[in-house]
Image (cartoon, rainbow over all chains, first blue to last red):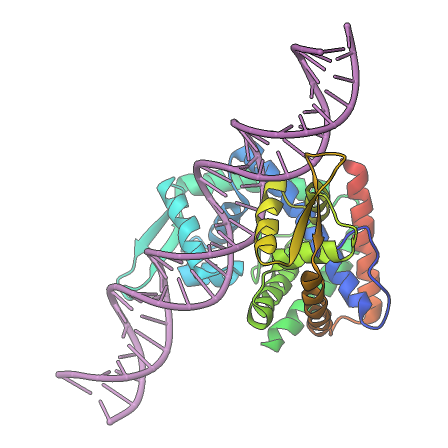
Length: 156
Length: 156
DNA sequence: ATATAAAACTTTAAGCTTGAAATATCTTGC
DNA sequence: GCAAGATATTTCAAGCTTAAAGTTTTATAT
């Protein structure tokens, strides 16, 4: 899946395969760098950062199923990550009166403060790592990926 | 990290952050789909496929460290995946005379045959999933990502 | 009312992943 | 030759990940 130096054979349909391989390598390269920095600088992980980023933008809280859908990961997965964040006091579960199956998950004040610090560093890292991509290319690329996403969502 | 429907605030440097978010969501979406199909159709996993794809292009075999570098994953990780592939008869470790710390890892005949079948389906899936990306856009996007990669490699 | 289904979430087992520590082998400097 | 360091790999603990099965609660259809 992650092909590298060796060329993909040419032929019909190979352009898209090559695109996929580059896409995957680029995102894995950046992800690996971010993971390492999050660990070194803030002693945290990418999945934790993802969950906190989602919650940061939803001050009223999110359901577990919302988090799972939003982050594109399984629901069982979110349970474990949130459990750990709760045990560290960064996130809180609030039982709801209406539907007792669910609970609203939100950042604590400490979690919110902590995330704001990390997010600022994170944005700087992205600027650095993608610094060589011109603003114009960045916008064009974003546009292409956005239209891919729209097509995808119509798909299923 | 994986932001979605909600917009990223505007401001200087936000274009690259937005690009990263789209990039990550696109690759995660495709990865999830491929993982599911590999499981359903061939009862295998993405990491296994990655390892076999790398070995398929190196008939003479690869060292564990080569695999690890090529796939952008840790060396301890590769050990486990190769162990399982060996136990299923798809991959073989061959001790070398020269350096007894290392062993050449290669596909068995069965592994090679198995991979060829899966790879054909995989290429078809990519064509389908990225079908809405025009050939021209695919080539342009690939070019941008390639230049990102070159810059990156100069970086470290 | 009450069975049945649906929904939200957790638990479980298996596998993936990392970073660090441990093991074994090779290389180098003396 | 041999100690010291470098290299290649495995082992380990902790955490991430999925799919499937289980639990609790809510909604629906008789």
